Image 1 (cartoon, rainbow, N blue to C red):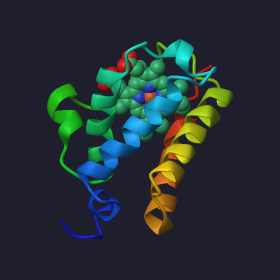
Image 2 (image 1 turned 90 degrees about the vertical axis):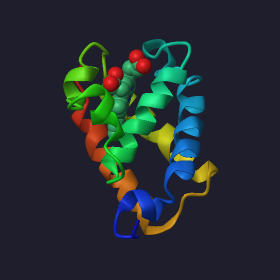
Image 3 (image 1 turned 180 degrees about the vertical axis):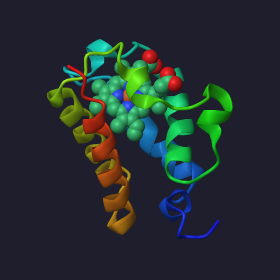
Image 4 (image 1 turned 60 degrees about the vertical axis):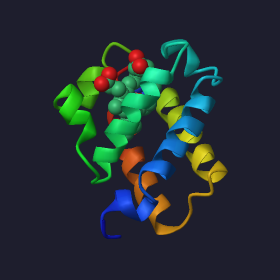
Length: 123
Ligand code: HEM
């Protein structure tokens, strides 16, 4: 559980769960994002916690339950424009501010999310 693994450097399970819950609270009320998400984000948040745990080098929770992430393919049913990718990243940045996630680990995490978000653009 050393600090060179981003998942642990971030603070592990509790911090990641707090971040994801705060993030979806913002997604749920965002005018560009809410129309393409389910009304109830409980399951979405559960799966995103699994994914981000693994994305940051923690236990492979997502793959254990769902198989290979294939994120771009799984997002194909949803029209993801550049504006929606930016909105997603804005919600994440605000959530990071709100839970006071700071320093190099925040910068590293946000940079990787930025790359992934732009990769999801399909419309
Ligand atoms: C699922 C939108 C970026 C990870 C979803 C869903 C939507 C969505 C609508 C389906 C939710 C549900 O049915 O429960 C978007 C939009 C993005 C974006 C608009 C803007 C670029 C990302 C990024 C990541 C990510 C950057 C990861 C770093 C996931 C995961 C799922 C998901 C893990 C669940 C996949 C599954 O069903 O197994 N996303 N997403 N998304 N998204 Fe995104």
